[in-house]
Image 1 (cartoon, helix red, strand yellow):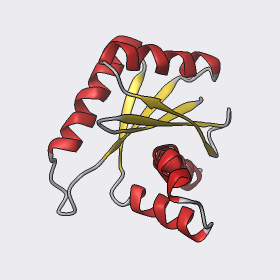
Image 2 (cartoon, one colour):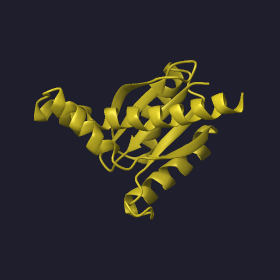
Image 3 (cartoon, helix red, strand yellow):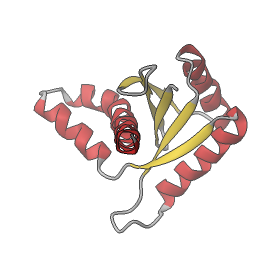
Image 4 (tube, helix red, strand yellow):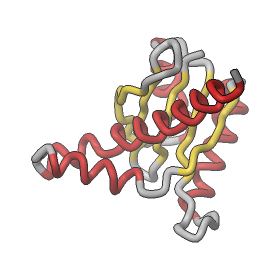
Length: 143
């Protein structure tokens, strides 16, 4: 099963995909948001190109675990994707993924411009990799 991981923001959507075996995540692109329909069209291109069969959407909960406006936007977008694609959409707690993405790029000495263009794609990779790691450890403990 191949998954897509999404970091849904108000202006962009970071996109990552898993390898065919579902072990590793790789950042693919950042979709500039225009409208729900345009966003869907762009995402469907990626889903088709990589034969995606499942979607993981980052859920940016507040630090106290509550659902704020950003998390609600992600929940709504996930429901929209599930309805329109017929694929199962799962949510992954993405608290601090953007901060971790920035930290990694700072350590790699990326310019501010380069960091801005990559942060959503890297955050999507963190979201998807966390989900894949959790699923992998769950499967291994069941054996």
